Length: 335
Image (cartoon, one colour):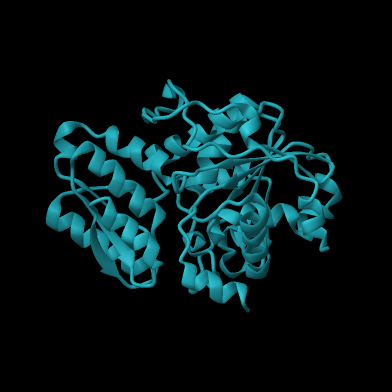
């Protein structure tokens, strides 16, 4: 039995909630997001891993992106909303914004790179989003989105570099720390930084001593490089299975990551795939690569053998995103 499987063999697992947990009255972060379903109890997130307790927050609805997208769409006044919304995204934010726009009854123009996973593109179409294709580069996405904005007047909602988006994502911290207040460490995927920035701002306002770690693929480690350089670093090309983690930090998110995120833990794609496999086989949960990276980071030697982090006793791992392109997944598992 491998070390990771041995760790998972000691699980005391309760099933994840059947719907995304919700929290009423999130006006603290200006996140007037309405959600449906029964509020989940703390032990629904709880399992024992290693010799201490760790917690995973699940998003069975697909991904965390709906929080920020819904907050952004429903904060628009009627005049702006009537013009619709536009964004560029590789998938999860795209689908989230399309769904939020559908709920408000307004058009959504979604710029998607041609290399986006088919399952994510289908989600956008399913929610009524109007797909506009771009090349894979961030520059191409931005140029096409700007063209759509000029032609339609639609309100641009950035995937992560937007205060409304950060506020919506911050509700994750409010819920998690309300239900599991003993958490002393959070491990969060990082790409453009919207998720981790919202989580860090909210978590630090509740518990200033909480430690925030980012998890990033080595093939797209611009955030790790930025932390070392003390400024935003971008990459000409990224190479990772985690298609949702290929964006770069923005001027909204960088100061938060710079000041509130303790460390960026980078992992190989092979470690991400291993974490996905554990989620599939043992936790019985479908997780895409970008969502499994937090677990990969906690299981990595970088985290496990760092003596400076030995006091991290109650670790919350944000696992978000279940939009898996099965063809790519099978190929990756067989390598």
